[in-house]
Length: 566
Image (tube, rainbow, N blue to C red; front, side, top):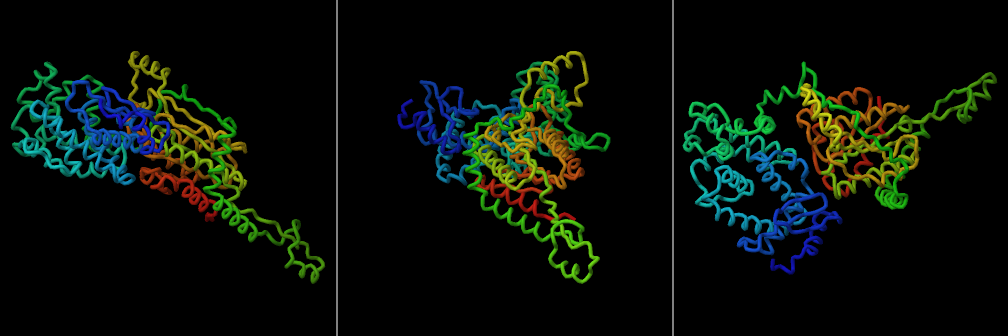
């Protein structure tokens, strides 16, 4: 392509600025655009293509992909089966992440608008041959971007459908996380299918038999077409008979009714827990003292620069608190000067001593648990590592017991083989919610050690089964002799695994939090650019500016340590 000023090297530098991650590279590929873990792939048109993006549109494409990389949980989107729900999730999520991008880089808006205009031209050229579903998704995309449809796009069925889902579109615009974008996409799919199935009393939705969200999928399957008799048109969704059993299950989950969703929350009136197929393949790695010493020293220097004044202030507060609390009238200890007068006046006086009473805070044990999911990659993980270092270093200086842990789940070939074997044997696996992924649990600095060099090895994993990790960290904390136990969790969203139902993962997390709180542990949820912690943890903070994470976390911990419990 003739764009010497926009080489992969030039675009790579721009991508690194936008993402804040200096390992990101940029390349071109005819199968793009897409985002990979450490690479942004831009679309490379074929040599004979007539719709090659100009420089501004190409920059807009890079801006969009950088926004996805920085603000979206790409793995959650990629885990969705192909179909309308995934297409809509992409559309909703792109709009959400671009709003974050525009806040940080207002100039990116113009390049994104150029990209939108280039895409609109390509859509309009192909409009007559597009399936009805793609036309509807394009109109939904335009509505989310507050764009007016062209005259050729205003067919009665499309306009009526768009109007009927306006409230769902308003809800989609308010998405605050990748998981919420996925949920809003499922809600839109369910709403549109209900319209096509006769759930709305209007002739607009029965004008054309082919005007359904899944018309082209049903038409591709002769068996499905033969089953969709006119008498069934008002009572069923064609897609159920046009898909494999696994796809049908996924689509059933998408269009789930509130009653069906509630059945996932409870079993016999009790919260449903996320039960693993097996824990035999879970791995706990103790990295205490095994990090790079030089990297730890650099990390500690950065951490102390952030929190040294707060550490000194907390130390003074703790010492002042200790100096004003004494047990007087003791038979041994240090001389209590006000009691000397009694000793002179009463020769038989035997308790002129006092003993310093150490405040409860000094007996606290603190555990820091870090979400290592892929969505934490980049600046989030850098700041989480710095925050853990700041907390751990300060707690060691102040003589508190402390521990730093991390968690994620990763695909396990051994678990997959076991699952497939049990499936082949006809075992009932419906009670399990983690079937293919093992827990990857990390101990970066354990209780009883004053060597926190392992914190330099904190890095991302894959998914985040919060409930299981939380109970593991709590059990370790409860094993410590302490007057108080504090568990701080750093996370950037809802619990997720590649093979677990999100509703079960959430009910599991709530049940675990209730159980841990009842044990006497004080839980603090710290949300990184995401307010999901507000929905689970009674004591929580949401960090809107990542640079403030170490200071805010330390301030919350300081208040807890100085707090007097009844």
